[in-house]
Image (cartoon, rainbow, N blue to C red; front, side, top):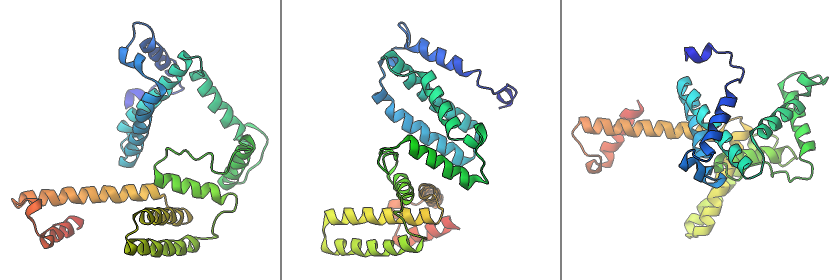
Length: 262
């Protein structure tokens, strides 16, 4: 990291990436790169974004630096493909976000006065609403988001126009209501109703998290991480005992699980 930190870090290396991408896509460049489309690159954008999040969660700056580079490559790659088909280019992408940042920070680039971050957010949303005039309340929430994250973002957007509870008590009561309806569907063996009611339960949970200021996606990631670590610990302890997990009784598995938790 020391060699990177010693440079000016003023963005002067970005044109090199653009030039490399142009060379890869030019006649005589890379056959694989030249075969790609915006659609074929879609999975890579999602994958690289998740790898960035993983590096942040691990607190690994070396990995984060690398993964941000991979994500940046996707932006430059797709911009170059668009340019090749007569559409926008990387300068349009960079110019657009620069203009947006200036417009939405009038307290920095203009003469607007603010008294804290809450007012900054309020101004940002007001400016954004003017820019997006005529669009639906929820139009800005990407459909491709992971469903739990999308649920929380939908709740946030709806809250801004009054579709919300005053505090966490409302969505918590709604959660009990939806759980009861889910239990009724399960008891009746109604598969479609079970799926619909389970969706309502999950949406209610996301709203509870939102009202409590909890990132539901991060909370579930944390649980999955702990569960994964404990399963690995159980497997290790079973191997140390010369046992096969499939051959252990429920009581033996429970004992290993409790040991892993400790």
